[in-house]
Length: 82
Image (cartoon, helix red, strand yellow):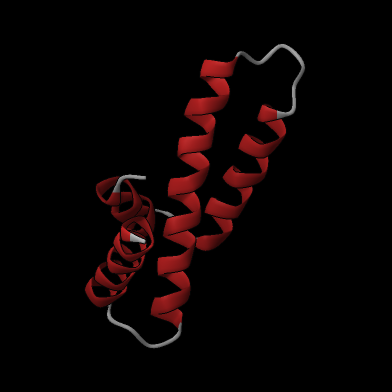
């Protein structure tokens, strides 16, 4: 998970676009001929897209974009520290 990538996705994509991309990546991972390395890359993308969607939800909930990104980062760092 990379916060700069999440920020880019958040700033440049709508939740609808992110959800559509998420569906495609999830379907891609289920294909029989997909290698483990390809699944790892798609998984990283899926994680970043989910993070951007969560930031979008926070902004819709009333947070400023910068606050939403910071709150998401703190949440992730807090879960890693446990």
